[in-house]
Image (cartoon, each protein chain N blue to C red):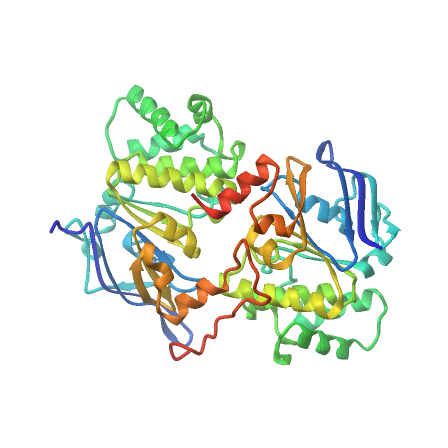
Length: 278
Length: 244
């Protein structure tokens, strides 16, 4: 068997409060190959913190510990800030939720994408420009030359998110972490953006961690799913077998969602006392 | 009687016209949905009915009474609105009690304490929340407060602007159940804006699909459930929801 792309063992993230340290991720373990892994959970389940800790983006006073956290054999926890800079963007990159807040408002789209490339590779300027246009084309933006000259406020949300994706993928990372990449977008655009991510990830043989609160969406785009609740993984299953999920939390989440041909008079509500001690 | 009747309605924000030529009649007791993508003008219609988008031409009438362009107390007694974001729509420095009492004070209605208590019970909030501030409540609890505030004046019509899209699925289920129960108990009329078609399927009787400021199709919810929307754009929305 080939070495996994990412190995995480007993990951813990905690923050201090006036009542002592509170753990938001409580001993998470998983391995990731060149596959698509979905992490699902509700607000406060620790799913985003998991994504952030892989890139060491959790700042003090937050604290991250793990028995093992290795990316391609590199011990992430032992890396200095300077060494991390060579990993972030270049080898592992992250797409955030809202393009409105994640793009630099005073820089053109083309310059921002080029910056991501130039920061990690030494290329002549003409090649950089060509790569930017090619990348915008890959995320299905019509007329990429014109769009490269626009500012973020001049593009729509769906386009902004595609620009984010092209920025994250242009250095050709091995792992992409997408944290709620489409929840700020319209339903009709969501599928489009995810199809693009899916297509690029499959074609380049990258690993993908898709973090979302939407079970159906994750099951459609991932191979494997981790369901998180209160900092722990409560269920792990293949995406196709979600309907066979056994944990009451997963089942509760599935049942609480209305369907397009809804005939129930009342939606079942999660009984939070059924599991865990909270 | 029609709870809401819109005819030849055009709405603009300064020089930009965003809603064109809308005709719509919503019967009393009906639950009606407006669906479509961002920027299609669905929220703008709600805002015009509530009096928050005063630049409109055509006519808007609520419970048979034509609406003026100005703030209109009689209309606010009939129509109230619930907004999308429960984090942004409650005054951060007012207690829940103050938030719920304010509409009563404005309209000179007495017996406020008792009404607040009763309303908290109706939306499923414990009395201990009464003197708390919004930041001490979860998203779902805040949305319950927002619904309670809208119901304080005992309106006949509720305008719901994406009432659950900022909430987790399990909390969304609670709020949807609450909305359904309140409508049954109080005989309310709902006009709901959403882009979530399953929510429409659960809560509504009819829907209108909007695109670029125009209504492209009005359909019965049974047509939605059967996947039989006529307009190509409605079909597209349906396909996006069901997934590839």
